[in-house]
Length: 348
Ligand code: NAP
Ligand code: G4F
Image (cartoon, rainbow, N blue to C red; front, side):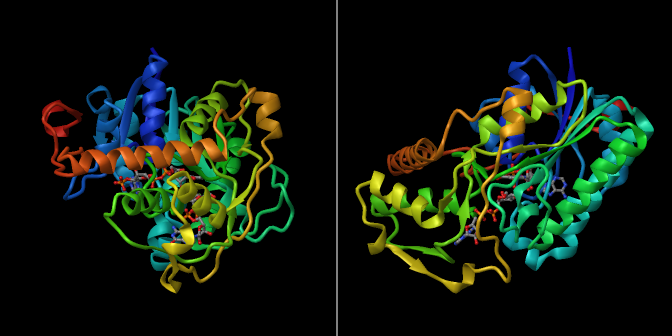
């Protein structure tokens, strides 16, 4: 049975990847950060919380990370942990650099010392292309990071390459374009829109405030993208891949498609609030996934319209159930008793 270690398992991609690897028969270990309020709701929603072996650790804590690698003794490491919200990286640039940049070097150093045969996937990002004018972007396009987040991810992108070429390690960057789902965090623009539109439809909210309707993104579906992470690590040769749909749409198109599907006119509800504008933004991203299509035989199953439909339906169903009095995993979170959290004290 293959063993995997996932960092960032409580996030959108971590949860879908854990589900995917469990279905493939993997023994799944994952690190999580202890917080005052537990955030296992995605794993609970997917019904997999009790199937994962959880190890407390933080990307800033070298000792705990080292312990996690020893306990998991993995064949594959998927590094998805990050301060992933671009806007927040302007408020917390040093923290973002520590987790998203140095955190990766910590992991690489640990793996290099523990077992160089372990394959590592790094959650790299289309944000690296920030200010690029060339469309579409591919593996050969030069990077122009436009945020502290992107700068930290550019550092980790290069560290992966350096460990691959310098030490012969199986280290791959997945340069993933935006991918969304009903498990997306509520602050990201897609989920902010579908959640608000569902609430507006049900009379729970009147308006939706957004920063800017012009930016364009290449939006895909998260479960399609985690499949690709795994595919990259099944090859004989480590390489970097752009993962995208190849289509691009504006925030306004996302808004319009969502509101129209609910028979609402977005112009009656959407307000612009400069509070949500970033000091520097990324205005147009469009990926070229030709290499992934050719070499991994990967292709996205869900594109823009279907994605909007899936997310809007999930939010509408959830709020309808809420109105009927149903509670959800995120309503009253507590550390459940029936989960496999590794405790050092019990292991001695
Ligand atoms: P997400 O939902 O924000 O999840 C991020 C995960 O990282 C969470 O589990 C979070 O834990 C964990 N984390 C944050 N800081 C940590 C720390 N100091 N130590 C340990 N864990 C920490 O992000 P996502 O959308 O799943 O994205 C996964 C990865 O792909 C991220 O690295 C992101 O930057 C990258 N990426 C995402 C996209 C996208 O469109 N989704 C595109 C390209 C790249 P808590 O739950 O405790 O906060
Ligand atoms: O949904 P967003 O916050 O995602 P962003 O910045 O593209 O970052 C996401 O995708 C990256 C891959 O390219 C990942 F690396 C990263 O971790 C994250 O998952 O914003 C999308 C666009 C931006 O241009 C933003 O300025 O929407 C614009 N926007 C306009 N009004 C807004 C809002 N974004 C948010 N979050 N909230 C607004 O009110």
